[in-house]
Image 1 (cartoon, helix red, strand yellow):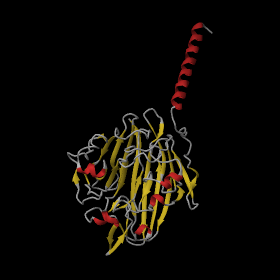
Image 2 (cartoon, rainbow, N blue to C red; image 1 turned 135 degrees about the horizontal axis):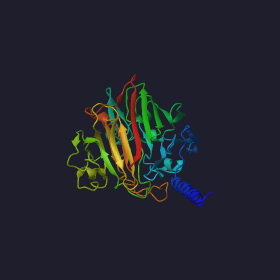
Image 3 (cartoon, helix red, strand yellow; image 1 turned 90 degrees about the horizontal axis):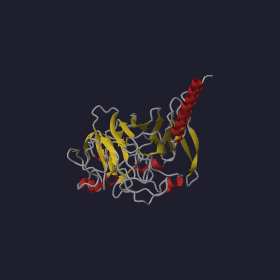
Image 4 (tube, helix red, strand yellow; image 1 turned 90 degrees about the vertical axis):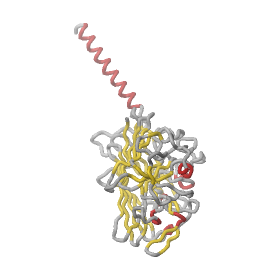
Length: 391
């Protein structure tokens, strides 16, 4: 072999070695499990997460897609306890607030990651009338009823089945007639399906044997930085909404729709959440920040892009698609460093944000709002997607 040939071989070997080291370094950045091979089928892992105070077992289900996204769900409240998403460098980090133990969820949970119902959001004075009969509910938020009452769907033990043809699970629960004051036996299913484009599809379905009201949502608190010690004020938010619902002093909609134009509630052009969150505005004062429902621009009542959040530092983007008429933005205004973070430390005010797709608050008492009444023989259906990407 000539000197030239030997030199060429050595250079080729050095090049391959350099490429090998570079790939190894890139692969080592991920904090998540290795992505699946193209011919591997995603597997749903089931394991014991803990037991309730009356001895009921609570299971954890882990969904993983081929890109490496991982979502962990427990059948207590249908709670999403962990959700990893990649930053622009491909590093997967947890982006939802929550706890590491069942005990914490049972002791004190501001609806972290939960399925909320039978009626999400508030009902004024915990009362509504249906077919000439008045129903009284728990007043668990001042004088109002909030998120299904003292023991809503967020505290229920759901039955779980793994889906056969999709990478997901179906959660089922029967809310009995009179539970938390609501009429009718309500049969509910919620499916979580994780796709290979880093989208979680949440599908709701319900029917009843007696006329009732229903409003369901998913209540995850997101922080796209992956660091829960940081506030979410630097996240850029877009909302596909020309109007929102102004509130009275008890956080109940006053009944009319108000334009977002020339107000802190205008997110039609993306802006950072923190820009107007301390604005001198009566509605900002009432919510102690943002805790309002926006009216999604959706005349056809189909699945539309309702919101998009971008975190410039990490590059993470989350888009929210839904067929619901409203979306509640809550900026964790009342977290006060009393709840322990699963990353160490505590959860402070504005350490997360919620985008809760739903019907309007207090709809049973507002005939002009889209109806939340469900009759026997009808089926309630709804769908919301959370899609992650980077830029």
